[in-house]
Length: 111
Image (cartoon, rainbow, N blue to C red; front, side, top):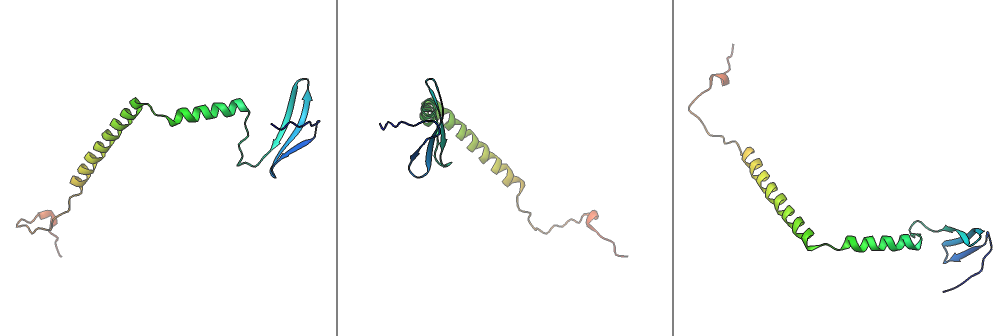
């Protein structure tokens, strides 16, 4: 660990893009100002550890959850198949078959 002494308003550079400035010193507390690119996440250590813990928990799936997701996916798949079948039935092609019967409603009078 590198230990540096800095006074109020003095800065430490990390690489070319991260600045840490001592903003204030009161008793046993030091306030730091941090300037870093938005691509660099800056967190207090306890917050960082909580984020890491939550990410680990979110990346693991219980076997019960897998079964629930699997049965839900099968239900959705069968519902979609049933819906496709109903749609196919409703959109059957119209056949151009000649008929013997003439509907009076189709007749047009020419005057």
